Image (cartoon, rainbow, N blue to C red; front, side, top):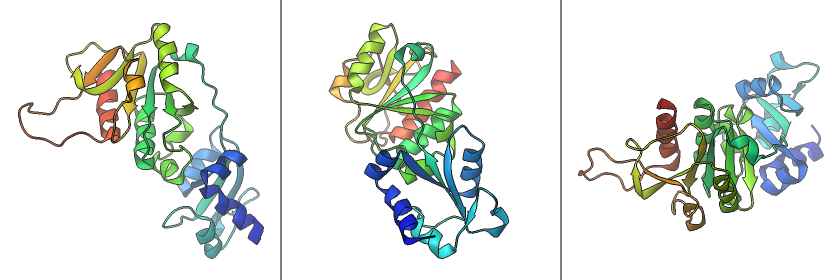
Length: 245
């Protein structure tokens, strides 16, 4: 590889460069193979393992892989992938269960939520601009391939979108400390579930758009417990309860 090629790939660690080029890096043999079998457009595949070398797979040295890898421990295979152009249509969301993330900033949390959405059959995730970048390498790795099946949209004004969805008759659910016990509430398999920021929870603007306020109660209710649940853990519990109904 030339120095220019290495610099170009290393630059994709930066979100601004990923956005400008509309590209992201995926690493790991299993993930790359999944991408090659998906609808995603792959620009380039690099490997340090000679057995994978082929017409569309380039063989590079371990030293070169170490220089371009975005992981602490580089893998043997890496792909340069085009970011899909996911178009958001509120009309098409009306008959689905959707997750909306209001400022979820930890890449690991976002990646885990994408993976949970995939597991529970949620096809769309809507993120506020304050959320972590879904093409951050930590997010991509944490999704374990789910990013290929879940469409992720970023919106400038999440509360406005929720307002529009509510006006169209959609249920807007959110978890709050003063919410109603989720296990006693009537839940619909259509609607938007809003999950809030790790520290602040759901913003006031989005809170005002909720039609149903939910609480995941501790057990037993009168015993001291942790102050709160991790947002990814809470998302898993909520999605499981929605799908159980």
